[in-house]
Length: 433
Image (cartoon, rainbow, N blue to C red):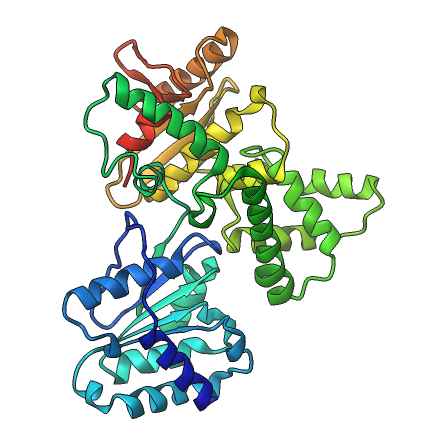
């Protein structure tokens, strides 16, 4: 294994780093803590690390002070816990002078190795090394890493491109547009239409539609195989695929395990309710789906009312499902939800006393700011818009929250001096982290 590690270190130090599009995120970097980058496969976690490596080199750090290993490299398939010490032996054998200065270690998809956390803890405690970790599991964000590293880590979640990152990637705007004249608005309307269609995964941005769909479908296969089937030793693959297809065909809709179980039963497909709960946990753990519970102070109410399930990216939804123009509303809702996630909001949906619903009650975990947001495709559908408006008003009165927002595809106005109707292209820019 030492020869393999030595080869990988040499390869990294010899090759040119790829060009990257700067993301609207930064590593927190606190002394004595590992930086953990999490997110679904292909969202750009590795490129985010390359961005940091370039920043380090630009600041005067020698490339030889930096180590990068991808644990999904096939040459590391036989890597086990006892091989971790060999990384230190080989690295400092090559660069003994780095014992006297700080080094920077980047470990990609390290969760593949059992007991990896014990090595990271030792690095933090005994070496002058800043550690950066990436992983495709939300357990690296929650209890798993909190327990294993005992408060010795800070996590950052990487998503597909936001709309402003999309604009930057395609060189439409170098930064956030500050004015909204006729030309700017025309460009933004066209851009948000394309963004809705292809989504924000970096790799597919310049592919034609047929190839883009094929690549995105491959992402789903990769998540199912590597992050769920192999990792959790799932054998009932048919049910898992039916579950994914079912959720993607009703984006942002409530999901009931009982109803889905009965559907499988009617199709003579065997499964258990417990396995369905586990599969859903695995899919959210891999960042493919996100749960949005009902807003309630009653735990019983939260358990009785099904959570709504959102998919990470509209491009994935378009690649996996057939969609007519009349049902683009759920895609718009998905875009709003994902932008709230990017902004660090905890999100729930609201059901008022008179039975109306509001799509999002969002509370920022840092600032404590709360918002009520309703999503409606267009105001010209007067019956639907009036229903959405009344639901928002009811929730504003009950909570109470003095202002509300309705995000539309392209309508804009102010209602009763307290409800802001705003087009999606403007809302995404104004709410970019």
